Image (cartoon, rainbow, N blue to C red):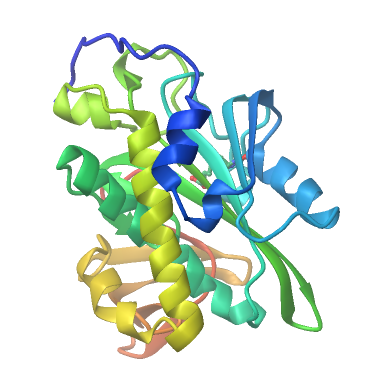
Length: 275
Ligand code: BTN
């Protein structure tokens, strides 16, 4: 549903509401907020290199060089959406980080559902979709030493109170919570929900791995059963998406009937433009 509702909440994020709502969450302790930065992922990585602690949240209203995967830009007007990055220092191996991206995607769609009632889906590995339109995207970056993770930065761009129909520059079909529901939601409350949800999933994963999320992330995946094309450094591959495995990798059945494990690359689904 497209709408002409104009957000009344055109003011900066209220950090005291955010801190209060986060309460005892480890994300409450180190919130770095900038009205304008190049990219919250860039800033989070700079802070990480200077020793910023696990749980640091870097938030911005506007980015001059917001980035997505595959060197795409992330465009968002100021004061209406959520643009933030989380710094984590999980004691894990590099290959386990896929699981964290999936948990962050799950927490994001669960937070959206709780705050607005909207059902969104994960387009493996890092996109949030409603129908054929993109609601948000995750950019995961990591630093490793001998395959041990030093830090992970999880960045999320989530379209909240934006009216994509009114924008001149759109890279792919986009939507927002406002465009879908006609209602402006509190960005602070939404962010609190996503962060608290993610913190609980993250702690569970640190205790027992990501196995217990396997069913949930498959239920919430929009690719399964669909014919997909994977563009990867080694070439393109087509097949039917079968499941997201316990590590967070995509399993597809290729045209010769063999299962292939896909750990990176760009997935396009027939009828859905790349995003
Ligand atoms: C994608 O769609 O490929 C991922 C988009 C990720 C965008 C977010 S906005 C906050 C954070 N800072 C960035 O520069 N990128 C991520």
